[in-house]
Length: 195
Image (cartoon, rainbow, N blue to C red; front, top):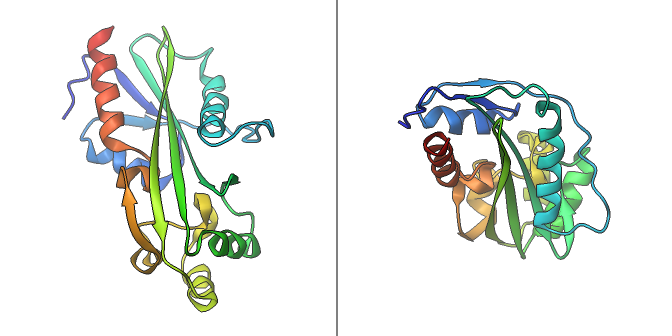
């Protein structure tokens, strides 16, 4: 458990996976999220996209942040062959994404923003993920049986497809799920001691 020194943690996310990760830290936190436009300038690449979207998610809190509060925002993207893969808009898009990832490596990039009444900082974590070749039947079965539409790159490493698709990863596992937990814990510990 992290001693919070009177700080209140606010997780600005409706991701059930991020909520479970934060609960595992055994610290009290509340949930508060605003709907924001997650589009980004077309010239951005890789981690710059995730960092831009995290900044967008942070803006609604700028005028309401109180002393002794830390607002945590996050965004996860998949980057493959110079292409951005966010959450698929439908099953057809999910099929296209999984076919692109099949037999290749890609990067899962999560940026996490930390807003206090004094400053805003971002940490970004990248994990390299290597996929086995997937058959069309494996892709279609996964899309029908589970819920890839709420996941960047149309897959969850913790889902059944992770068992057959993922050859290996280099980096943080929790980052691929949606939150680099060890790095987030370290940052919270630093912020509550610093101020």
